[in-house]
Image (cartoon, rainbow, N blue to C red):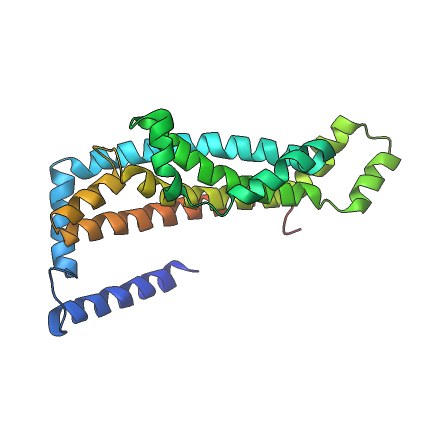
Amino acid sequence: MGIGKVAASLGGVLLVWWAATTFGEVNPVLVPGPALVWAAAVDLWNDGTMGADLRVSLGRAAIGFGIGSALGVLVGLLTARTRLIGAAVTPVLTLLRPIPAIALVPLAIVWFGIGEGSKWFVIAYTVFLAVWLNTHHGASHVPGTFIRASRSLGAGAAREFFEVVLPAAAPHITAGLRMGAALAFLSLVAAELTGSSAGIGFRIQEARQFMQTEVMFVNLILLGVLGALLDAAFVSVSRRVVHWEGA
């Protein structure tokens, strides 16, 4: 989607939002107008609150994503290419997939306390399952013709893995990483709702307690902007790294 279409879409939403809060029967306490939200954003930025929350939340998301994605790729390749590990591990992970991250927050606090460890665990758990599923699918569905061709040319197991399996699975792995990055922000909010003193999720919870809906809107929009920028970055990088996907 071009920049012009994105700008037109966002401009239309902003116009409808402004009109609804200005001329409609909308309670400004429940749905603040764009001007109130902008003023709240400026205040949060000027007093350093937004910057501090961004640093804390992005740090948590990055660490959780790094742990979850590394384990997801590793375990996904093992379950897809090693029959014994796949038979032992895949059913367990399939059972874990429907469990939402927010349901694990109390358990994570019991295991790791209310410090950073519990938040990293919740984020890593969510990212791991998404990356594992995509990696497992990609590595287990390598076309048989690729494998037979490599073996007929005398490729050993290691060369076959690095030059055939990994390139064939790479589009699925990058798709899993892209999904995992988005899920990292979703689980970040769940992790920060309890036992935090800073961060975007904490700020939303604090604003709810004081009915500061304009602050809630600021942080929700901030999450959307961060997610959109990260997704665009992943698309750009994946097109360069996995350049053979569209060939």
